[in-house]
Image (cartoon, rainbow, N blue to C red):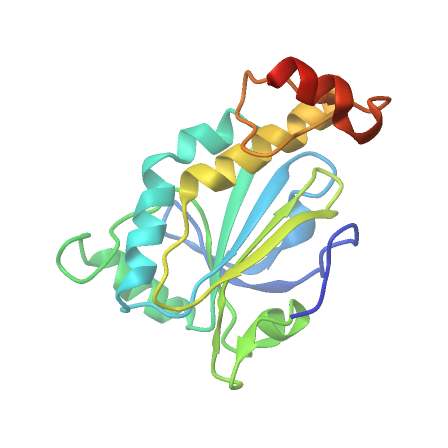
Length: 197
């Protein structure tokens, strides 16, 4: 996997099943650039096992992302028709039900290749990219296929990004919203570590 941290996220345009059930045939990442942070959330495929648990979990806390001025974009190498069929089936019966964020149809695999997360030229790895409002990648990670992602950790990272921008402080290990940060002038984190001891 290539390292995208600090770089502009690769742009893309592809069909996407939108939250209202319609298909946007020219959905682009640039729709959000300049105004919203984004979580670009690659998953392996519709009608799988771990993937629906992740998307349903994202849907349940979707408002947490909205209050943080963050949009979720889920992407797999399925077609938009597969996305539509999957959403028509309720969660717990083989589908995911209605989701409050777009499902991008990367059926050409061009987006997954652009982000260097394609596996065996077949499907996307379980990859997460968190972008700031200007479209720069501030976090990227990949989980092995059997291991679902921790949605609360994604929210924590967004909180840490916001804290760093607003307070101009660094976020130490295990930082949580409301915790103290490290002042940028605090060489070797001496002040932080002495006060946290």
